[in-house]
Length: 596
Image (cartoon, rainbow, N blue to C red; front, side, top):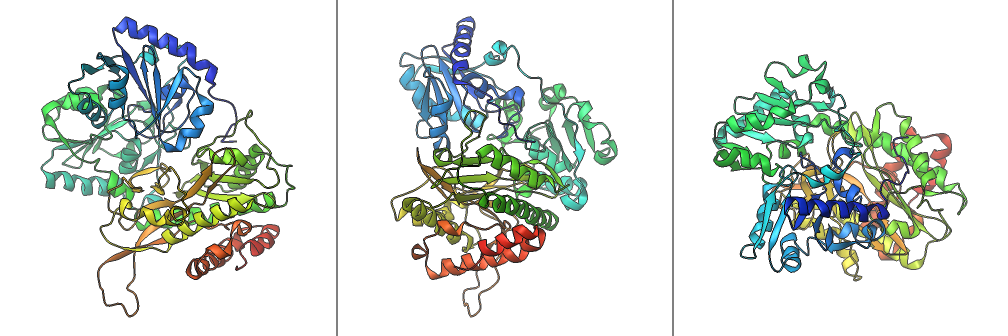
């Protein structure tokens, strides 16, 4: 299997490691040290070699950091992980609600007499450090770059990943890397910039039409790149990873070992674009006055998928939907109490593996039943594996990495007869998901302008959820992709070709969780018949197709338009997925998609 269920971190391992780290504070003359969930490339996901936050604290979430001081260690986590962190860290670590409490404000409270806090300049961005330093002005607290103290005490730290890179075929990429390089070089020329630093692996992998396997679930090869205004690229990647790619990359992509990266950065002619939200501090320091702040030049072009990428994603979703339906039909046939979470995960992966295009799952499958469903990013282990009991819900959030696309879909399912309060909450979540799916909006609006649409039915009942409504998704790349988001803090205008998730939810700690998710692609909206306002509009096209559990829907809480959308969607599911499943599953699917 791609997924394992072993326990990867235990709370009891944290205290002795914390003590060892504090001993190193004394050696370095520091009052604290920052341990982020980040690597030198500043992507969301990290290899085992870079999973320092989990190794130290036991917390395995995909965002957060730990600030270790001599007498307190704060683990900063956002709303997605407030429940999870309680079970994963020892009492010696103090959870801190973030971003409600900033690092700077917390340090001011914990170090009233001032002090020096160290950080690894490879693992933090200029933006992060600048924000903290602004808050700390006049406090006597300074942030100082230093050696990585966790690496110093991590005796069995895994080696850096060295998986081979491979060509991403043109039939899926839709554009040669020469065309991409020339297109992006023009943006540098227009801005009067000589070069751009690219540190995010999914950015330079997209640019050069390569993929890799340096991070589990994410088909990327680690490295750094410099894009020049003449459309050439200097790629800094281990030679062993690039074996056999010489013809694909060609003479305009010059390859170097990663160790040469900083030295070449220092030689670049100004001005050089660097993204202060994704580049490491050490890169900005080496550029010094040559640096100009600007967005990663690959970020927006990568987000706006071309026709081949959208076509591939649509096909991947159809095959993925069929695999999910095989699992759902199987699960419905099992008596309550007879199946565990790990069995659900294994059965779903087995269904997906029948597709030869599957390369991996796109993240660890979330299969949380009962109280586990309230842990938003729950990962089932051998120790937490629970049976699906009568009256419970199970949140099943999963996806696949296919050669032609990346999928991510969530369904919440009833085991037996659901509680009335869960059914009502589920219907409100569904109403929000439908409202967003039906939306038309003017060109120029960002995620922050429209994401409340998916929350309104919950808000009217005094309910909400502590994660964004949606994230961007790559084209056989990272399942979480920026800069596009459906979030109250996202100010990036949505554009045609962007793929995003639509996933409202509701979580009652200790009882149940609910989330419903489809992936959508932004399209130019056709004119409305009889309309007299000719402004440009956008709308969504749904990519994900699988039934929504009708047993959890209180029809009285849906208006007529929402019910029409649901029935039309289920008719499409039957039409598109029905021919792709087994005869037994087809019978189940006909019933699961019957109109309400």
